[in-house]
Image (cartoon, rainbow, N blue to C red; front, side, top):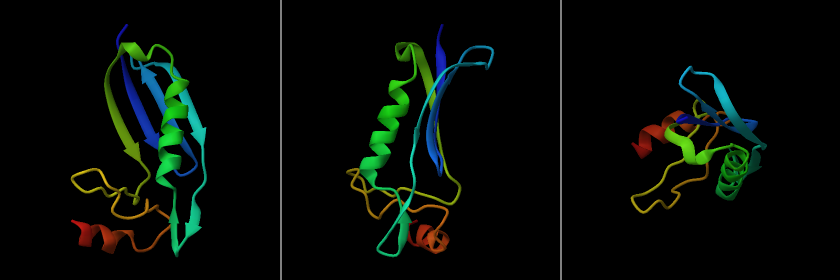
Length: 107
């Protein structure tokens, strides 16, 4: 059975879930994390993003049956990369008040 994968980078957990044709959950995994205050910014280290994604995905069964996927992240947070996938600024979370002006400047 082919499934669809949903990934969410939430403020307290990274979640991965596959759903089947009837939109019912088939398998899931998660990783608990917490933001840290570094240089005046609430952030998550990029290494923690990768660790969390790998951990959550490793718990999902039958990954070879995934046909499509979607990614969601916390509201008002962002990861900004350049064309070579170099992180331009620390992961900004909803806890920061500068995300709106900074996103406008990056755009």
